[in-house]
Length: 438
Ligand SMILES: Cc1ncc(COP(=O)(O)O)c(C=O)c1O
Image (cartoon, rainbow, N blue to C red; front, side, top):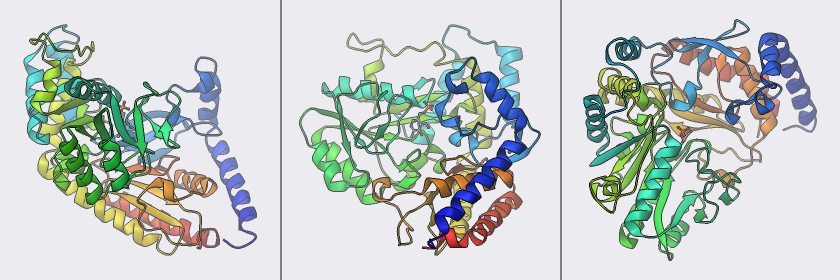
């Protein structure tokens, strides 16, 4: 950056913010109203953005319309859960069939739940599966199963890992709201030796890891890191849990299938419920037997909505009729091409894009070197002001991207919108060339 760049950056940011306020008056009024019921006007922390969040009125296909009447191309994709878009006819059919012909909240097992279970087992190579209402719950129950199976308590996790609202790790320790502050060993992501050492230590029940840290900025685990964890866990009798909540869409058989890794348990969520609240955990039958209610040793796994008819029908239809194995693989190919075009567009600047397939993240890296490949978020410092500026500018171009730079694609996004985004990124690079130069 040139010596006068910080000033230029703060002027550009002030202008962008003023435009945002001007464009979104109705959203601002709704936010002010919301502060009277919700603390800070918010009931989902990630969606709070300063000075106030844009409030969405509706979604159709790959687009969202704000209360202020602006139409956005959805590049947030509900943090990967909106894979099927906002009004997919197959999902609408499945939901309306339940409402009209099946009924909600039947308070009993149904034949549909085992059909959906079979589908998940086949797709993701699971011997047994259990359903939950969220990815957070899936991870909590997977950890419970691992603890029962091993009769140990400690869990190896990775810095900047995110496994749910009460299972986040930052600054080398569990986040303040962590469900279980004491039982973690937090290791640097992609540090194979440190991971192996931690897995081999006394009293470890499980190692819980994302194949790609999603919330942590779409940082990919290296093959050596993931297979190192797998081998060390197998040797030490530690349960290897792969968190596929964000990555299961990355291939016909998820991230594990793509990379040929074989975790003991996997956890799932997001789009797999067809756009409804859902989570699942599954894998080795001997570990999942912890939940077999026929056994006197079993632990309870409850949840009023675990097998609700809406989600078991919508989720099954989504996998069977929309995101078939072939479509999943092709979508990842398409996403990877888009990602490589973005990487090309920002070459030689302090922006980098990381990720895989249709899930990616932009980074605005401080320092004098071009960072193409980030192995751990611990190794880079990001410029939040530049990140904010990018966010404001992309909103102005009517792309609904997340403030933290995370991007995921909706299945039906037309190629013309992908091209338009690549052009918008190129225009940003050229407009702020001096701020982005290394
Ligand atoms: C990798 C990962 N695990 C778990 C979760 C938690 O899922 P949920 O928000 O459904 O509780 C998330 C959510 O973003 C996630 O990205």
